Length: 184
Image (cartoon, rainbow, N blue to C red; front, side):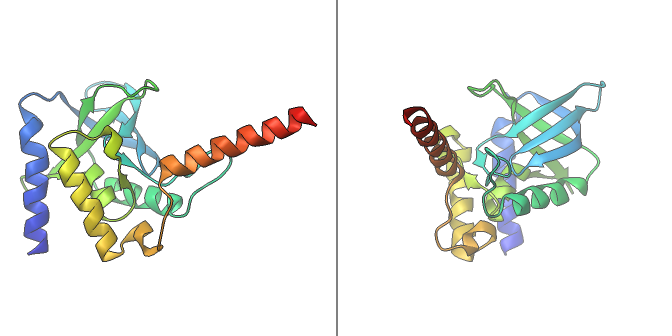
């Protein structure tokens, strides 16, 4: 039953955007962290970094610090992607930092599988609500709720810190250290 539900969700994630989306055939070069990959085009020698759409994974390298489950998130994504030779990506508009934002999909047995959604569903990333739009918002948020309920991945911790709070706290800490240094 759960497998059927996952199949239906994967279909729902893929079908609404097929007609209007720009899709590219790519292969994995490397996984940078739980929400960033480097991909290569299957039709040219071009490579590019891709920030996974709609998710935020625990930080692996931020100002010399890592969050719990940062390495596990990267490892899970890498294991998931390395099983396959090629993928399709849907390129979204670049984010405010100028990064490519993408959904990674693989059609497996004629069923599209969304790797971004899977990172959230397996508990290795948060649904990044600030950057989600329909139809993905409700699906990714539901995936996060299910992972939390099932205590998967980072949800094994009672109260994990979301990456956006972790980054914000580290920036504030750096600024206060700087202010303390210049006021001495």
